[in-house]
Length: 336
Image (cartoon, rainbow, N blue to C red; front, side, top):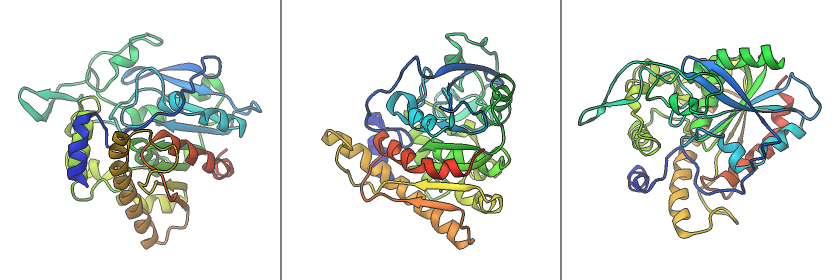
């Protein structure tokens, strides 16, 4: 499987990024920009208000590995914001963070001359709030990624102060890269996040071959150096592995929604042969990771997760949107 992925990635496919495109959903009159200063500079999020006007029920929607600097993929490719707001849930969509895993990195992702395995440099500079160039300036190369700090300190504080949003018992969900990040945030910040969802997530990052698979993926998705994120197999790397920190999720009693497709294309999953070739192995790898996480949770007696494995489904937005729609009632019961 990893050999197949290594062959696919140079074609422009990311191990933790979306394949396939849903109908564009962006509506400038629906959500609004919310800029917050961070250790990385000015970061934009998109906010969508709950239909009933409440400020207590909040969910964060995390993007995949190929996150763009203009809009979050959930807004570009799906209509989940409308479904969530109709369920009286406020939606926060952070923008940017390509290949970041929404983590605090060790250093900017710069490469040593002729050495793709080195990482040098230090954080420098920031962009002003609201600057049109701000997202490009906080891409983890000019600055050191500090996404965990942003999502757990700077953003919730600004949302509380300026929007009146509750900063405890929030939800968080994500696809692929964002799925593993959602579980990481819930594990280490249980007061902030009482619910976490992972769709097609990579939840066993310390399995044999996974780090090198992710290394190739991150080079493909923006040219990022995984060694700048965390050294191999050290405490910082293990801290990011849901398989490793599963006991914390059990102890926190965090409500989890864990899902992955079967890797078999269903109706409308992909529109061409190349799409099948790309999306099937990616989802198969996510499925293997997700099943391993389920077994791990079972061995420690954790009963706080719902697992969802549709009979068909590959690595694309259609299936991730379907998961959100299925998840909404469970999310609604476990936040606020």
